[in-house]
Every structure is written in structure tokens, then in C-alpha cells.
Image (cartoon, rainbow, N blue to C red):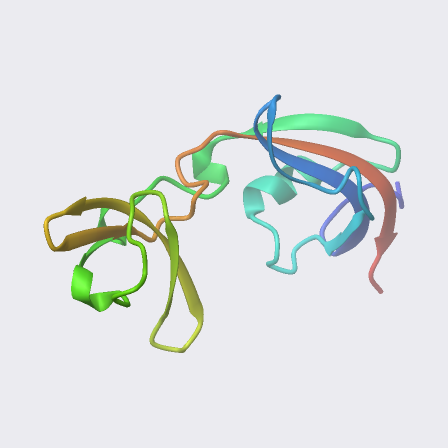
Length: 146
């Protein structure tokens, strides 16, 4: 029982985050494994739920619905900006990722959604919002925090 993943478990694992079996967004399988602590707030609850009860040697793939992953896109996160808000020498085109600073100075990435005349619409939703994800994990080691 002590090597089963529960709250506060420190887990060493390989993971792959995929949009489909052929489209991998991120993976550690060809690199060093990741280490995380269950319940520390760094992992989305939907992903943590998939890990609970697993033990070293387990290798599974879970489907994570948008509601348990990065959520659904919010139309209010698409902001209308003026072309003059961008540097004159900056190419502005749909699909281009741009970065702004929020009120606290943190980086806020967005993707140009569309351009209508002098209006540039920037989508600040997470790029994986609205997507059903495949979450593949291979558990290597489980330790429990004291």
C-alpha cells in the first residue's frame, strides 16, 4: 500500500500529453522523467485524479475531457486590439503567438485569431482549452512526504 499514489505522494514518472495517438504535445519518454508532488497545486486536478491509486510499473493512458483539463474556451478571452498597439515592424497574422505583460508584469501569451481592418483579435485562452487530451503515464517511483 505504501507505494500507491495518494495525496502528497512524490512521484517520478514519464508522461505524454497528446491530442491524438499521432499528435504529441509534450512528452518525457525520450528524456529524463518528471517529478511531481500530488496535491501541491502544480498539476491540474483532472490529471492528478488519473494518477491516484497507481503504483510503480503501471503504464496507462487516460482520456481527459476539457472540463478536467484546460477548460472550455471563454469568448471573453478574445480581446480586440488596434493594429497600432503592435510594433510597426512586427508582422501581424492569424496564428501568430504574441506575448504581453499583465497588470502584475507576468507574461501573458496570446494567439492572433483574426484581423479585420485595423482591429486585431487576440485569443488569450489556453491553447489546449476545449481539447480532449490523452494523458499517458508510466510510473517509475512513488515516495511519501513525511
